[in-house]
Image (cartoon, helix red, strand yellow):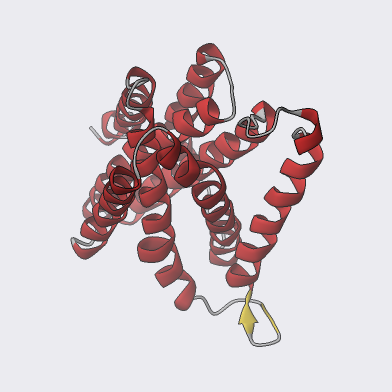
Length: 241
């Protein structure tokens, strides 16, 4: 029965990707919800975990917080190096960087794998803990699937390539869940990666998703969808998910 439960994240991730790809005319709404979900995931789920971290620090600043800034700046530099410069495009044209989209979506795939590890490790402790973690991952993986598709399409990747990354993100937590049944990862490594992941989320939310939400609609619809995505993450956090 436990083995069957470990396959559930595949379906919620694919469903999230399907929602994002089917809503072409309302894609700005998807961008807004994705932006809010990214911001909410960082504020309500990741940062509280960092506050309890007792690992390495530089000066008085714990490692995860430093990695948030490192990741944000790294994504900025990477996009400037890979993407076209303003002189290479028409004035006012939207810049699309497929490789940057792949990197951002790849980070989400790795994050999904770590979610799967948490499921597997939870079930090694007890079935109750494993199920609790599984419910949390199912809720988050729907947003991850939608966000992966949104990032890929926002950077001009083809639907085929987008589906490939969404599928990879759907398979990743399943693999992680089975691997987590026998592999133990140190808290410092997991929390350190979570800090880097938080930085990438903040970058894509502010640089890509929020501008995308504003382009296809009004400031009012952008605000409502962004707030809605953040509210969803807050409700999950308040419910202990």
